[in-house]
Image (tube, rainbow, N blue to C red; front, side, top):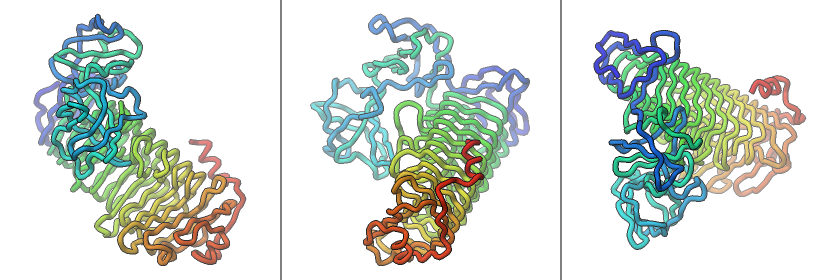
Length: 527
C-alpha cells in the first residue's frame, strides 16, 4: 500500500492488483484515488494473506496456520467466514437470568471463556456486545462497557463467540495462541485464498478535503472508507465488500454515486451528526447487517442527525434493520427497498423522527418498499413526533404495516399505494404522556387489503377522546374494503359505514374493485 500521497495528486492503482494495508489520506487535500487500466478494479484491503495451512490432527475437517494477530474477520476467496459461536444456530439463543447489571445466571458446557464475547438482545431493535470477564459456578460476568442504558434484561437471550471449542461446523473460524483455525465449507485447503483482517480501515480519509475515490474495490475492512470529519468527499463507481462495522463514513458535502456495497456485519453508510449537504444516489446495497450471526445494526443508509441530504434511486435488498434513515431537510426519492427488518424489529423501510418536535421539512416520494419482515416493520415509519413530512406516491406492499405515525403530527400522506400489508395499512400510535397526534392529512391514497386486514388502526393511551384529531381523510380509494375496516381506540373494530359516521365522513372516498390498475400491473412485471 502506498505510504504517502501528496496533496493535489492522483494516485493511480494498477488494474487487477491487490493492495494490502491501510491507505492513509488523513487531512489530505484534493487527492484522487483511482484504477489505471481496464483489466478490472484495483483492490484495497487491510487484510493480509495467511499461508502455510495444514490439517488439524485433532479435527481433520479443520485447517490450521500461524497468525501473529487476533483477526477481526476472515475471508476465503470472496466468502465471509463466520467467527465460531455457541449455540451453533442463530435461533434459538441461550437464555440467562440477570443477577446484577453485569452478571447472568446461566448453564454452559465449559468455563473456558477467556477470550469470548457475549452478544445479547437488549431490545427488539438492539443487540449489544461485551467481552466476558469471567464464568464461575454458573455466573457469567461481563467486562465493563457502555450499554447506553440498554443492558441485560431480567431474562436475557444471548450467544457467545470467539473460542476454539466453539468451532464445530463448516464455515467457521477461531484464533487461539497464535494459531488460526478454519473449517472451510467446501472442505478444501485455504491455501492461496485466506485473508485475515485486523480491526482497521481500508482508506482512512478522516478530516480530508476534496478527496475523490473512483473505480476501486475494497474488502475485509472494519470500515471500508472512513470519511468522518471530511469535506466534499466523492466516492464513485466503487465496490465495498464484507465490512465488519460499516462500509462508508461521511462528512460534510459528501457525494456518493454508483456505489455497490455487498455484505456488512453491522451498518452500511453513515454520516457525522453535524454533516450537511450529502447525496447518495444510484447505488446498490445487499446483505447489510446480515454477515455472520446477528449483531447491532443501525441500518443501510443512516443519517441520524445529518441534514440537507438527498437519497435517490438506490436499491436495497436483504437488510437486518432500517433501509433508509433521514432527519431534517431530507429528500428520499425513487428508491427500492426489498426485504429489510430481517433481524431487528420496531423497524421501517424508510424512517425519520423529530424528538425535538421541530419541523422536519422532509419529503419521502415515489419509493417502493416491500417484503419487510415481522409484525413491527412498516414500509414508512414516522416516529417520535415526526412532523412536516410529505409522504407522496410511494408503493408499500407486503410489509408488516404500510405506514406508522408514532406521536406524529402535521404530516401529509398523499397518493400512495398500500397493497397486501399484513396487519394494517396505516397505524396511528399515540404513546406520549400528552395528546400528540393531530393535523395529519391522508388523501388520494389507494388501499387494497388482503382478507380482513384493517385499513387503519388508531391507538392512544389517552382513550378515544382525541382520535378524531389524528388526521383528515379525503378522496382515498378503498378497494373491496374489509368488514373490519378500522380498529379505533375505545370503539373496537368498525366497518366502513361506522368509520364514516364516527371518525371520518369521507364523502369523496371511492370503493373500487380489487383489480389493480394497468400502471400498477406494469410496475409489478418490472420488479
